[in-house]
Length: 87
Image 1 (cartoon, helix red, strand yellow):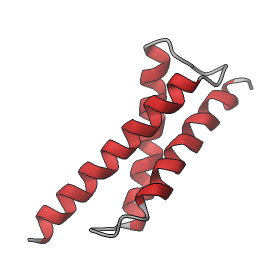
Image 2: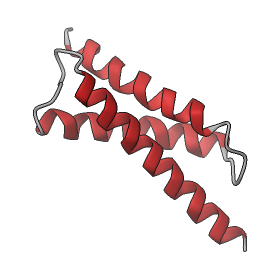
Image 3: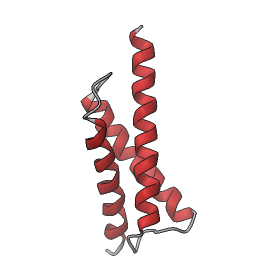
């Protein structure tokens, strides 16, 4: 049950990036962005574990930063593609 700690840190970091992205108005897609943030947070957390900063059992600030910026970048790409598709 100790794996819940690491994964909850990933989800909180991804959720924080999603909340901050909600303040930027162009091309907002609430449902798609929320799902993308959760999926990317999980994938980035697993990558952080593979890179040996943080992991399942322990919260680590390096994993938080890695997940936050991964989700922020992914949401930026989602919005970029949405703006391009709208043209």
